[in-house]
Every structure is written in structure tokens, then in C-alpha cells.
Image 1: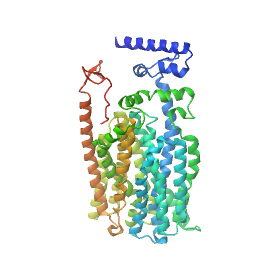
Image 2: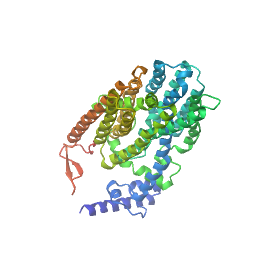
Image 3: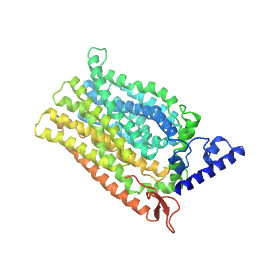
Image 4: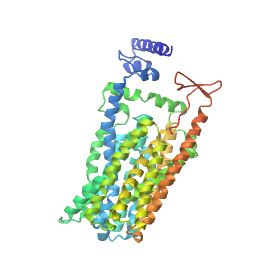
Length: 516
């Protein structure tokens, strides 16, 4: 009976579409009214009134994956490369040539994050400036500044350049929010995973490239660290030009989609957009902004992000120094920095895929946070117990795999669990503003006075990741409670009981379901 009812509804929509076309309506309008155009509809098409086949949807998603997701991942790889290669430059002679002691070096690192945090508000520009213009401008800016680090002649000059670099890269943090314009909730973790996994991949690439540049720079006319900044910074300038032609402003403006594919790209997100529209009026809703600022779930995710960023920001910057202090040569230290991040690249993608497939966020955060804590604890215990260099190095692997995976899922979880676009934008801004303060702490966990073991810094990071796991469990409990409360005014129908209908006096719109 249910299938006959749905078939009857679909037939009525097709008739309405024919009427629209007969009255001079265009094909887009016919699609909106329900015209199938002779195409075979899928079950999901009938239920959601989105008139496209699964094959058409898969084609559109694959194109966005190949042309958009991989490109923004490349941009993030260059971004992370340009911010974190200072660790490789330090042991290649930067500290000696510019007279950087431990305190000055920490200020050089901190200057980046201070400007990075202060300019997080630039994320809202994704809605004001066309993305292809915005991305081109910020990538070009950080590419030029990163390259100019190669001509720094003093501590003050390097400090200014690192501050400018933070401003240039701050606007790029909104990429996961930007990707939500192109992908569904249950697709976002994997795409964010590809994006975030560019960070460990860039660290792998940076370490390998740094090893080659340092070796080449020993016989070159300029200092190895200057060559390092130049070679790793200038590619961003070139890629910025390409970004102008690759980055689409919306699903319907992607140049690599056909006319039909652009329509499918918009239709497949219609149900998701309609759900948000039913919860909020279009545009900026100041009431919802205030509600978001007082919502406990946003502070839980933000503090999780803060704790994870302590580890995320500190280890890539200080790992070459730590390995060097373990007794390795500069070249070996550069080479040993790469493998942990290469493994992290693959694990992040696998974790994001499973998280989307199972529609589960909290379990993966808890697992990887505890895994990262175990890695840091192993490094700390091995250092305190004099177990030797290789035990400490082994701990780097679970530490890096864990915090990169946690970062990916926290960002996705935050974007997933906002009921409207106003709340989504505000929640993401809160995540960044609070969470990005973590590096201010993380970059000061490894002073020269703690060398060569850095036991205190490793212990603090271990404790921080345990706290992340506890906060994730608390957030899951809170969201589950909200879901139960939201469906109290609804009953369930259908063979599988998956369709909610309002009870007497209940709301007419379906409740927003938080992802656990």
C-alpha cells in the first residue's frame, strides 16, 4: 500500500510538471515540480522527491571529490607546510644565524598563532566574497610571505613575517564549512578527512624535502634554511593562480559539471537545506547566534579542539628538534620525522570513511584520543625510565595518528550538529576561536631547559588527550539526551519505524537529529 501511495504521488508530480512545461515553464521548474524526463527514479528519489538517479548522484560526488576536495587538500598541505617548516629550518641553522634562543624561538612560533586566532573572524568572508576570489587572495598572500622568510635577517623581521603568515592562513580555516555546501552530513567526515590528512602528508613531504634541501644547501651559495623557506613557500604563489579557475562559488557554478550535473548537485542537497530552512529563516539570525553562544555542546567541542590543538601544533614543530636532541644528526632527524605522519595520512582517511559509514563521531574521537594519550605517555615514561631513543620514537606513531584523526572528527561533528546555517557559522567560529588558542600553550611545552627528554611536555599532552576522550563521552551523552527530548512529541510509522509524524499538538516539522 505504501509503494502504491508513493507511485501515485510521483505520477501526480509528473502531471504537474507536464502542466508547467505546457504553460511555458523551463526544465529547471519542471524538475522542481516533479518531472522525471523519462529517467528511471530510485527509491531514495521517490521518498525525497529529488529527481535524479543514484548513478547521476555518484557521478557528481566523484567529480567534486576529484576536482574540489583534492584541490583544497593540496592547498591545506601547502598551508601546513609553510607554517610548520620552521621546525626543520631551526635545526638547519636558523637559530644560529638569527640568534634565536629558546624564548625568542617560542615567540616566533607564538606570533603566528596570535594573529591566526585574532583573524579567525575571516571565516565569515566565505559568505561575502566569491570563494574563487577569496581563496586566490589568501593563498597568494601566504605564499609570498612564506617565501620572504628566506630573506629575514633578524629576530624582529622574522617575527613580523610569521605574524603576517598567520593572518594569511587564518581565512583558510573555513574550508570544512565551505565543503558542507557541496556534501551531505553523512559525507562530510571523509571529505574533511581528505582535507585534514593533507597536514600529516605535508609534514612527511616537508621532512623528506627538508632532508634533501639541507643536504644540497651545505654546498650551495645560501644558507640551507633560507633555501628551505624559498623552495617550500613559492609553490603556493603558483597554485594561487590555478585556484582562480578551480574553486567554484557554489554547486551550480562548478565549470567541470554539465548542465544536468549542476542541477543534480543542487537537488541532492535540497532536503538538507529545506530542513535547515524550516528551523530558521534564511539569512543571519541574531537570536540563533545568541542561542549558539550559550549552547553547552559548542563549548564542549571547542574545548576538545583546544586540548587536541595543544598536541597538534606542538609535535610537528618540535619533533625535528626532539629527534636531534635524542642524538641523531640533522639529516637523520629530518628523515625520521616523516614516517609517523605518512602513517597518519592513511589512518585519518580510513577513520573518516568509517565514521561516515557508521554515522558515528564520538566513538572514533574517544578511541583516537586515548591512542594519542598512550603514545605521549610512552614517550614520557621511556624518557623518565631511560628506555632508549627507539622507545621514545615508537611513541610518536600513536601520538600523531591519534591527534590528526581526532581533529578531523571534531571539525566534522561541529558542522554536523548545528540546526541552521546561522548556528552552523557561529558554532564553527566558536570552535576556531577557542580551539586555536591551544597552540599558544602547545608551542611552549618544549623549552630548551627540558631538553633532551621533554618529559613534562609529553606528559601534559597525554593528559590533554585523555581529557578530550572524557569530553567526547560527555558530549555524546548530552546529544543523545537532546535527541530523546526532541522526539517526545512524535510517533513512528512505517515497517521499520523510521518515519516520524507529529503526535496530537506536536510540531509539524521533523525534529533535528544530532549525530552521536
